[in-house]
Amino acid sequence: MWKLIVGNPWALAALFALGLAFGGSGAWWVQGQRLAATQARFDGFVGTVKAEGDAAKKLADATAAEDKRKKESSDHEYETRIASLTADVKRMRDDRARSRFVPAAPAGSRSVGLACFDRAELEQALQRFDDGISGLIAEGDAGAVGLNVARRWAAGIRPDTSH
Image 1 (cartoon, rainbow, N blue to C red):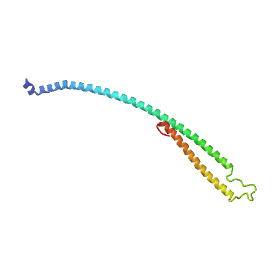
Image 2: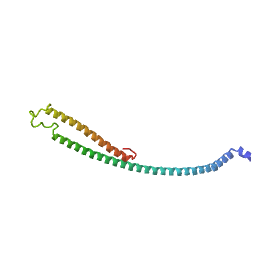
Image 3: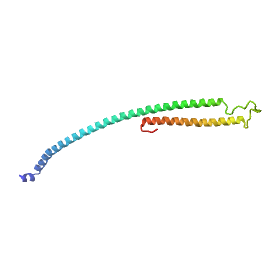
């Protein structure tokens, strides 16, 4: 019988086809089961990642909206404080502009325009000096207000920020 099988190429081909059909179909079925299990795990992974991504996006959107609200609030506070500071500086300048820097000459002076200096030139020089100093003070105050508002804003978005 062995010679009949080995000597006949058609018998060998038939046995090969038979083995391939049964062995291949079994392997095909096993691989199909593994593929289905792997696909199910992959689909679960994709669903989990999508759900976590959606949750992270919602959290990021909420955080961004809160940060934007805090920034707008800080900007409004800054604008309000700067407007108040500007009004105070203008009021103080106007108060100083109504008065003179150089005191009036004594009632019994021979020349009310002189007091060891030219009264008009001294008045102008003191006025320029006062304007320059007032401008520096106002600029420094505006910078301090901006810094304080920025500190409060930064403390609001990062609670561990020191003052």
